[in-house]
Length: 251
Image (cartoon, rainbow, N blue to C red; front, side, top):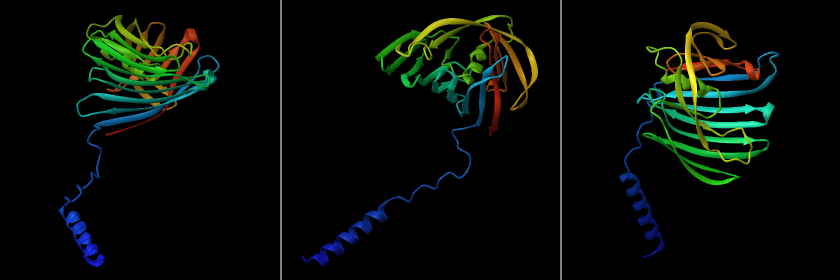
């Protein structure tokens, strides 16, 4: 068999293979079916008294067809040489499902971890300069995950029972993000006390919003909408103020 015949057979074989392949599916040209609504924005970090800028935080919230929510944040706290990257997903009732966190302090990686909640147990896998760790922690029915960006702080009161009202205890799993860099990114248990003080319309650089005003331990938060977007956070004892300076939303 000469080379010409071999080449012809090879060409016909390739043509036959190509013709046997299914036609590619047409791509979606509309909205992404995995997102029922979204919002994004930026939070300014500054001192409360003299308004000295300390950093900022970009965030995006995606709400999915199963009513879970995903929050993606990037923090640049230049005043403390801190960067935090967090992705967290919660249930329709704001109970944490899973999270990924990565923290940088003083020019070096502090550590990164994945945290997953199954029933009443949170399992963490953590890596960083201090080594490789696994951790299992009890997760109460009503709890929140403190990852330290500000946008998720609007979610901590998501399990607050407005029908009961008053001061309510909410279990917290605190991830070690900004302490001594040599310490691993482990979770510890504590409680916060949240109380709904009322509904208020407040103005911040991003606009004017109807909000719910909560007192939580020694700080106040103002959140808006069904996704509890953080509009303002005031922590007088630490001379800290956090304001929503940019906000977008869509279906």
